[in-house]
Amino acid sequence: MPRAIPEFYLHSRPGSGNLKLLLLDEPLAALDKKLREHTQFELVNLQEQLGISFVVVTHDQEEAMTLSSRIGVMEHGRIVQVGTPREIYEFPGNRFVAEFIGSVNLFAGRPSADQPGQTTITCHELERPVLVARGDDPPPQGQVWVAIRPEKMQVSLAPPQTAANWTQGVVKEIAYLGDLSVFLIRLRSGKTVRVTRPNVSRFDDQGITWEQEVYVHWRNTSPLVISA
Image (cartoon, rainbow, N blue to C red; front, side, top):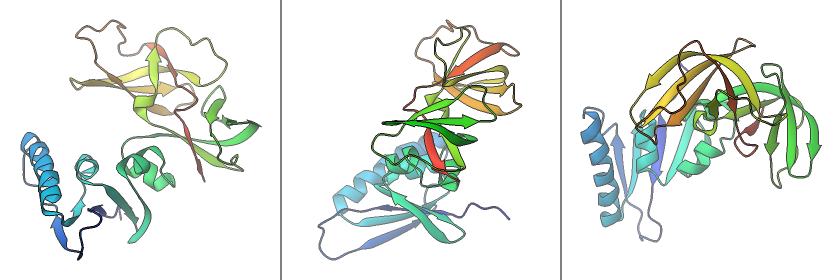
């Protein structure tokens, strides 16, 4: 039985007096992609004009992010996190939310050192430690998950000049999607990571191809530590 339970997305307008709700259950499911994207913004404009709270049920994550001012993610019929689209995506409260909303690379690990504003995590699937900027958050304890979104990773042919936050692997799959390219890279540990790169130029100046050894690296502000 799949774990994913339909999400409920709430787009509300405060201060509108008596509360009115419009329930929309998969309203755009039958539309093709371009028409669906156009209609999403039409629904947002309609909601703003009417001042009515919309409750939208959808399995389309991009649709949910576009339509909502608040998102509620459900697991086994229970709401596990509520927040803005940015909060849900950038700061998921647990592993389920991190995996359910968007794509994510997850690494099991344990804190091995802590400094003011930064924690070092050792992950057995990565050859080098992961440095995580944590701001004022308390340092993590025990078993944790390090979550890194694919667009927050970079791939290159040359090794980074740092002691942490990078690893090596071999390119196994490449998907060109026009606005971005997707790389599936198998690490030496056997784990496959997903990296996305925006195609800001019409020319491929890096020349990365299949079965090529590459380096995957990221900033210390990119990972998120989630309690196991």
